[in-house]
Image (cartoon, rainbow, N blue to C red; front, side):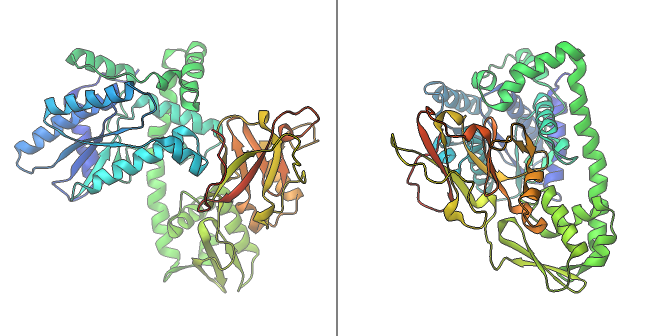
Length: 469
């Protein structure tokens, strides 16, 4: 069980995280992400206590609340905004409001609705932070239950130690002061204060992955392992935060030791323990969101086997070049695209229309990235992403599942190119490894009913067809 929430303790924790996120800035301000739910309301009360005490010392650090209306719950969403205005008026806190419908963004980006909404909120909050006109950070109401759910989802998806840290107390411009307290402790605190809040039913009743985990899996875990079992994932995140913090310090020292101007000394990099070598590479390239474990493994294998003058393309248009014992990074001369540069589009075939060739496309020719399948085979939103270790699908006609890594080897995909392989997924899993294999459920049979084609196109291409929602 998480400890009871105390207003002064939460305010002190927020102050510590502000100091960590904005070192040396005595007047750093805070933007509070305010939805009207219990966690964000409790956070605003704690931030108000912090700001009031700060203003009494004369430093004048600003506090601003920010509320974004997605318009997904007609009527209720408008009432959330009215509630947030009233709360901020009572506390004397300035409120910044915005509106953005994630449905259009989800179609354009080929994302799920929740993912698109999260992206829009993040952009809105960063814009609000920029409006402060000075140093500051963004506080969100993520709490211990959110941490547990995040760690469980990442564990089951096959993440590494960094992913198992879950929600970090300080993550760039974002801070998370309520991580020590669970949802029950937050609600009990608000009830004790006589402070109402708004309830978003989709947080529990929705069909997104987090809502289903919260509704279906967490109660089962408590029933099997006992009420206190969920402290384990949260405690794991706390322990990894401390341990990996030390590893990051060691990696920074290692990176300093292997630098050669703006490049790296290859021999010194390969002499590092693999864990330090991987972290040093990520820090040097500055693209952790694009550089997955498969890419790091590919880079190190290429350096061990490659020769002077060879090069390697990375996602995001980056290219590595080895000249004797020196590794340098620049812009790719040929392939400029990674999975993040492409999106799926779905079009219905007219009744009796020709679906065209039933292959998987040529991995080197985007003009062939088109797949026909029954409309009934698709579940939820389509997404394009890079493949990950542990990914599996049921190749057409095989009769069982197979790892994507094995399929790439069998397709004789060069090791240096495997990191660029893309997969198309929906809510049930992988449909298509572009240029390599398609899943059994995409098979077209007599009587398949309505047929659709899935095309992979560049994100900046004009939309001519609607993405399946």
